[in-house]
Image (tube, rainbow over all chains, first blue to last red):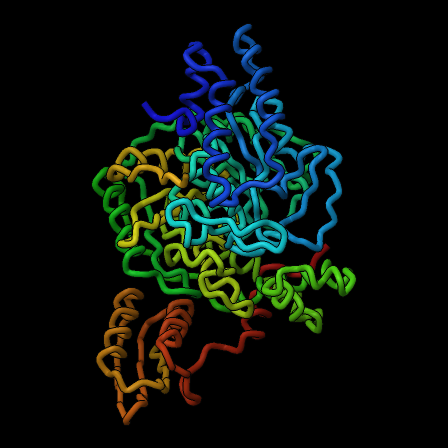
Length: 462
Length: 99
C-alpha cells in the first residue's frame, strides 16, 4: 500500500467515509513527510502544523458523525502564497512587499476551508509571480523533487514541488502565462489552467486564473468541484455552472485533435520533448482520434508586445516604491521592469493590443478542432538558480509560447506528464480545449492517464 | 509567392548549419525553393527561399534560423513588416475604438 502522504484525495475521502483512515493520521503522515523533505525543497511558507492538526481533529469528529463539511473534508491542502488567507501576510515572493496580514480569505482559500480542506501551508513563488522559477528575493530557493539541482518552474514553484514530493494531494497555483502548467510539466504532475473566470479569484486580471496542481486528473477534478463555486468578489467570473466534474470517462473515437509542435516564437522544442509529445499523440490516434499537425500561429510581435505591457504594468507599481524598497526586489525582476520607465503610451498600448492578437490567433487555430496537443514547455527543467530557461531579463518569455496564448485566449488547458528526459526529468504534455470546455480537457487528460506507459515512482526527497 | 531570407553565420561548420536548417525546415514543413550556403573560413553566407509559407510560418522560420549560433539576418532580403506596423494592424483589427 502507498504511504499515507502519497494517497490521492479521492482515495482519502473514500477511506474517511468507510472509516478506514482518519484525517488525523493522514495529516500526521504529511507533516512527517514535510518535516523530512522541506529543508532540501523549500516549497513552503507560513507552514503551520499546529493549526493543521487542530483542523484535522475537527474533521475527524465530523466524519465520525457522518457530517463532512464538503467534498475535500480532511484532505491536506497547500495554497500558493499570493492567494490570501485571513491573518497571513501576502509577500508575493518579494522582499520589498510589506508583511500585512490579509483581512480575509481570497475565494479559492474560502472555498477550500468551506469544503473542509486542511490547510498545511502556503507555497512559495518568485517576485510578483513574474518568473517561471523557484527564485525569489523573499523565499528560500525552491527546488525540483526529481532533481534538487533542477528548477521546479513557476511561478507556482512551491506548489509544483510540494505536489511531486507528496506534501498531501491537493495544491493550488495561479497562472497568467503558464504559472500552473509550467511547474506542473517540470514536476511531472497534473496542472489545470481553467477557463478564464471558471474559478473565482480576487483580484481578477486579464489572463489570470487559479487552478489545481495534483498528482492525478481525478484529484484535479475533485478540487475543481470545490474551487469553481461562485464568489461575487470576482468581477470577471463566469456564471456558475454545475459541471459533472467527476464524470471523466469519454470515448476518443472521431475526436479531431491538432498537434502543435512549433509555437512560432521562443525556444525551439527539443528532440526529447517533441518525441514524447508525438508518442502521446500516437496513443490518442490509436484510440480513434484524428490527429492533424498545426503550424506555428503565434508571432514574435505578440510576445514582445505583451512583454512591453507587463513591464509597464510592473513599473507602474515599482516606480512608486522608495529606492530602498526597489533595491530589495530580485535584481532580475527589477532590471526587467525598469526598462518600461521611458515607454511611450503608444508602445504600451500597441503592446496591450497584442493580447487581442494572441487571443484571436488561438481561437482561429482551434477552429475545426476539438482539442490541441502541444508540449507544455519547449525544454525540460533547467538549473534551480536560474530565473528562466534562458536566464536573461531582456529575453524573459522565450519558454512560455505554448502556455501564454491560452491565458490570453481564455481557454482551459491542462499539463500532464508524458515522459522523461534521459536525465530523468519529467516532460509535460499540454491539452488545450475549446473555450469553457474545462471538463473536456480533464476527460482527455484522464483518457491519456489511463493510456500512457507506467509512470516512474514519485521522487523521495528525504 | 516566394519569400527569400539571407543570413550571415559566424561559423564555418557547414555540416552543423545544414543539419540545423534541415531540422527547422522539416519541423515547419515549409516548401524550400532555393537554398545556398557559402562557407568562407569561419563564416558562412546563407540564402533560403520558401514558397507558399504563411506570414506566421515565414516569421517562425526567420526566428528559428536566427537561433542558429552566430546567425544574423542580412539586409536586402524580403522582410516581415516592421513590428509597429504589425502591432497597429493588429490593434485596429482587434479593438476598434467604440462606445
